[in-house]
Length: 488
Image 1 (cartoon, rainbow, N blue to C red):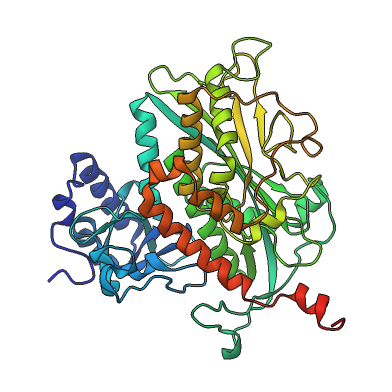
Image 2 (image 1 turned 90 degrees about the vertical axis):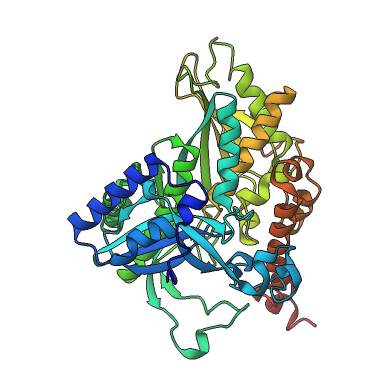
């Protein structure tokens, strides 16, 4: 009897149990024994980029490696309030898939290359998993697989996307966790938000005084990153109080996405264990804080020569022709792809002029007000595009995937980006979508993403996002109460 650890011989059945994977599995088992681990967390990144999974006793590890671990498919049907938004008890589970009917199980298969020992949890290991239906077919809603599909297309062209992460977030003191039963919320109604206070007050952007004041927290997070082998480069005090920015060394897209998923989860867990609350929400409703963004640095590399394909070779070039066409694709599909970079209602409240956040679909040379900032130099192998549109809560697999397909379309069609702007907030360029409603409409009519993601995934994703929008539109906000309650 296999039980909760999957189906007998599942890795062999789907052809995943290659000699290379088995070598990695053997290495994981050695690490587990050497570290004296007693439990193992298996997690997958859901449609929102949130980790979900199970914890096994360590003796179940060999079984999980070969047989996988079962999970309920209803997890794939939830919005950000944990509400199931598809009719899973109907034929096809509301998604036209027999495997989803009745919230039946799917299988998580651990990726041994992602194994870590969690430095904050007692004798606990962790692995990221890929997800499959029990019949061995891939789950079509796996965002990690969607990114892998895009990187596979790059590989066919002897290209690889290299991503550098620049992530802003807040860490607050946790004053009241709101643990009374009345604050617990319900399905479709998130729990009452924590009461928090600032780690430091005042806007002291990159001052050493402020860096030293918050050093106990940044050092705790640095040590966590080091223990997890995350390629951290810098820890900075960002613009607003209690705001941090961590940057990471460039890696291939899939590794960078895996790193982002682990980093976000680690920061939240470690901070919570130390009486703090970390949030990657773009614009938290905490007075006098500053909005957070996620700036994605990207370049294409020729896998045969190792050459940066964006690097200009003449002094009068901003980017190579390949790089300019890639920029053209990112601009052409910015309105359609923004939902993957900014998937929450909250994200669009960051798009304000003169705030270091973009509000229009433009590119510029080393211009931090532009959506796309080009950082390059003649024969400079670090030449790259910085997309400044994203929010730190975005699912990295979908965000990176959207960049690949948009950029490749620009390359294939030789799209020209036009002239770079010098005054991004005062030009006549098209504005970014003002809200998630418009972003949903743009994705719905996108020929590019319906072509490469398929109607099934696009309609699935839009159903989830529209469910969130509907709940927001039906909620009476503080703004409405103050605006209308007295005057009318």
